[in-house]
Amino acid sequence: MKTVALADDHVLLRKGLAGLINSFNNYNVIFEADNGKELIDYLINNKLPDIVLLDITMPVMNGFEAAEILKNQYPQINSLALTMLNDDESVIKMIRNGVLGYLLKDA
Image (cartoon, rainbow, N blue to C red; front, top):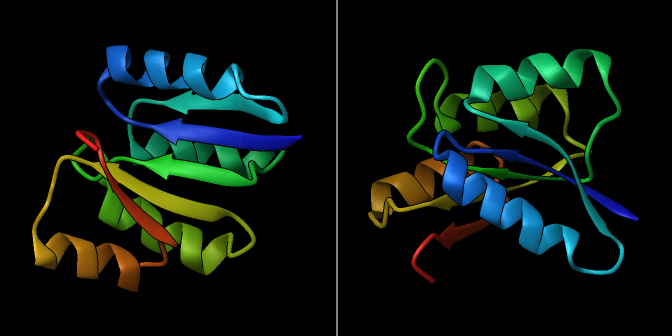
């Protein structure tokens, strides 16, 4: 079973995505966060997910900051950007900060 954590401040999108992921065999969403800090705080004392889907534009701690922490402190987690930002600078920065893929929300 692959475990997934979602970090996105849009509750409707996050809940819908969690429901979709949970409908797949062998995938289970174990945590949903409103921002990067909430995600990082969760990782400190809980079972690490296999995959993190990470929005970029979030309050408190954005996806750029969270991705860098994931890369440095939790390199075993596979992280993917899930965002509306479709500019080269954002893509390059997220890749440099450790995400393994970049998905647009309107894909």
